[in-house]
Image (cartoon, rainbow, N blue to C red; front, side):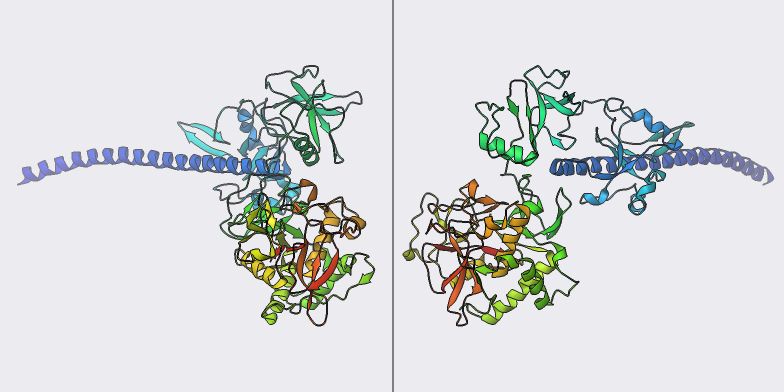
Length: 571
């Protein structure tokens, strides 16, 4: 029995020792694998952050022509010394900036938490390191603090998703805010006799600057708008003068070579964003913010997506709308959005110059606003009027149809709409349609209701809204009071009835035919009896009478003829 006990005891000790050794080996492997797993996760998080930021920065840059950054960042701390090992002496030559995460939508990062601190401490941004920065020239993105990994007693710090400097030739679409034309490349700068620098582009990215070569073009700044091609410019066969003029006025310049030939950026006004899935805040390149309604697309053309210049959207029915912005400062004090009387008073004061009536502009019309105008359910529409005031106050603006309402059946090639046509045809706010005339004010209001979108109210324009559009045009289009209130013949069609949106000459801030073409019904009343309704704007009936943009007159509410159409507001 003893021998058996000793034998069992000996076997147990050996087994125990072997077991301990195996456990030590397994534990070592598990610790190593766990550490390795942590390293992999940390690097993956960094790479995911950089990839997401690169995508969002690119989207922002393509839309606004600049990087989403405003706070400069100076790299000067010892823990970032190794960052220099991944900086390109060829590309990362500009200043570094903290990426403005709030300027982009849909950003959720694993690192970069110090961004929240920098927002309230911009002067000391350099002391924070848990932050993502971007080089203004290369647009390369780096994580200042870096991810430190130690393996085999060697420590390496990762700052981006590559470990060697990025020496790829950078083809930026914008240089100093100037957009480079398609198929051309920025190759450097040149100085004139006064020492002023200008950008030089070429169709060969490897070119050295030599502006005597005809394939190299120098940036020519053009601050004031032009109405015709400068005599020093020669357009090639495929280049169009109106296209050139639009580009120059939009981008404030063009590229010209030694022979006077030019390259310019063609503006494509047919490009639209994806439809918004909900009401969404949009901030334009000038920093102005408005709400884009659900299911609407925003224009991607630089001529059509600036708030102060008449931002354009397209709804799910392909109808187009322009935003009319109202300065916040016109409201004298903070008000409740139900303080209708004071909101109205502030709006009247702001637009009072355009409250006059008649072609002579001598008669001060009593501003009766909307009190029925013969429309059914007058009480309901009075409620809608208050809703309109509240909406303007809350949003500092409202939408109007980009065009006079058109008849979807009677297109520009079929302008034969008559009083017998009736009002059964679908109304649309689209280009190249016959204006929807031969319609009473009540019928026009019903059509306007049907054009509403995304839980908004569609309506004929109220008198104050027409005046506010006049003020918007005066403020942002550089027009004088007389251009709007006395003689608008230089800004609209006063010759022959034409289809909607067919003439660029009758467009102001992306609004077509606000002067000329057709008179337009509004919901303003012209008499105590409510038997007359007010129409606004110019038309083609009496060319000897200017019928300016702010023109106001009236006719019986049951009147329908070829001279009166309508425009819709959305709020």
